[in-house]
Image (tube, rainbow, N blue to C red; front, side, top):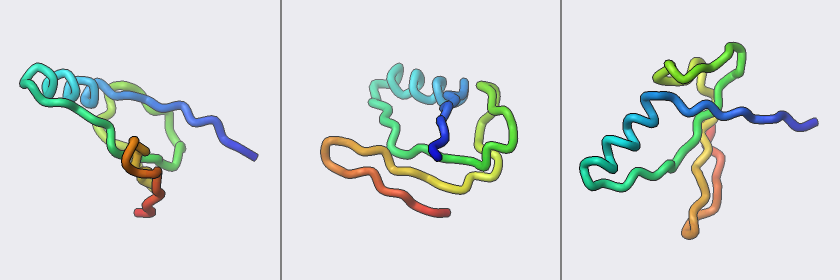
Length: 69
């Protein structure tokens, strides 16, 4: 049985990307954290509750890998 993932991009994350670009830097998403899902995430959060997995995002140079915390 598969689970549908519904990512939530937080305002803190968006601000970090915009600030990097404003200062002449490139922002890249390199990891995605996965939590227990026992709450409803919203854009005002600054971190996951009970993070259980961190997935490295694949790029043209690397393959996606799963890192258990």
